[in-house]
Image (tube, rainbow, N blue to C red; front, side, top):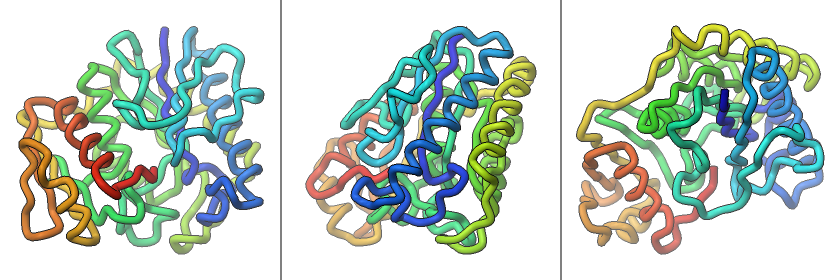
Length: 275
């Protein structure tokens, strides 16, 4: 049984500030170790429930964060960027389930730690079929295109509520409780890892109850940027509409078609990946 794990860092226990998640900062060395150990905990729990193969995709910033020397020996690790499927690179129809580890809320969410949506500095809001979404729902839709359900996710308490709206069947682990966007009450790393291990095992025992997240077709994708220049830089991409100066829209036949266009938007001009 194959499990796909997409690992971000902002939702990991102990991480509360941008200084914790940027490579040039001294706290980052601790953060990436905690991130790696939470992934390991998910693998351990899944293995106890019968999983035999694991692909982990590093999904934060430049995507060189997980420490290979400390990662579970049975895991294959996807590192680096750019990549066609972003935070879901490596997934295909052969996987039984997806775990989203260390995730965070969509941009603009009140009382949510380090909230943002893909391009942290420039995206105000993303929508699928008119509904605001964050990275978790976006990636669940990509997984759904491959017929693979998201069955476990971890992050702060406000993020858990966001996930419940889109993926109510999913096992959710709260690693910390947000106080402000840059402060929280945290589980210890060991306690967080124990909870993640138990939840991964439980999620797989509930696999028959899990559902796909599949937006109705065709898929309408819209993104509001904070400044008009970012919309303008991508507005020449075929099929993309510019709306109201700082909003781009695209209607795709599938979520994978939407993802291809979003990749082109991200790569256009000065738009840079910041997840």
